[in-house]
Image (cartoon, rainbow, N blue to C red; front, side, top):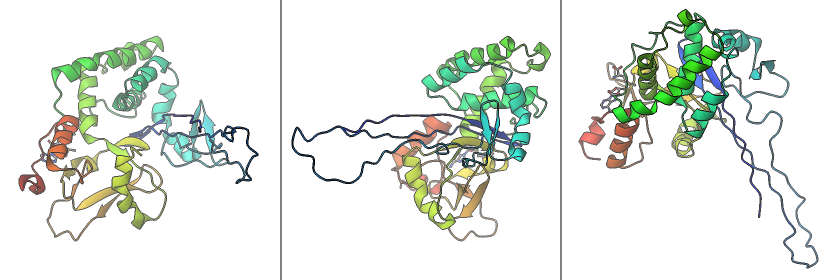
Length: 297
Ligand SMILES: C[S@@+](CC[C@H](N)C(=O)[O-])C[C@H]1O[C@@H](n2cnc3c(N)ncnc32)[C@H](O)[C@@H]1O
């Protein structure tokens, strides 16, 4: 039997007015045992070992661009594709490296949480003076049930105590109240995009979009201020794609009339109406009223 090894890592990226986080990758290594049960070995193909190469899966800590073996700059366990990215990451990274994130990151990983890591990055930006605590207030928040809110208490406490233990002065973390934390998570939850950096031709990307959603192929998540205003439609006229990093492009899926609203699809549109409604309600906190849903399709 082949043996599979799973290796995963997450990295977080913040960018001016947009925040992106998380890359994950896995590799498989195959080990073939002699399964010929004492019979003479048959000539076969040469053995192939599939494993992690030095560059595989490594992405820039700032822009999520895939890293080559030689092109990266290294800084405090983070790799960057360029000096420019390293410089731009200072807005969160200089604060981030002052604290020990093991408890917070472990908690998020073990509970399958990705958005609190965006809040961490945002909090570091605010502490460093690179963002205002109310930067995301313009975005629409998801409505959260009391049960969901109570689940946020533990990660909030861990975030707060990481800054306290790191001796970040009280006045610099005064913004970091439970209410602020919950408000940011409520906004990130409904406005974050999955960054799916795909190889291949620009024209091929749309056809692979649904497949990558199904395969959970997201490289990370990001909040983009203006694109956060795109409403959802189960029969969208536009789609957001990423070619090689967190810089996104909007692609029209059909002719768009002057004055027609650009709408994207937040989920896999191939699901039936009930499944779409459930996902949008539970994941994003709204009942979809697009014309496809209203028609019962
Ligand atoms: C990412 S925001 C989109 C921009 C938002 N309409 C605004 O004004 O900021 C997502 C929110 O817009 C609303 N929304 C988007 N698409 C919708 C749809 N198809 N049906 C109902 N509400 C929708 C929901 O309130 C949802 O939580």
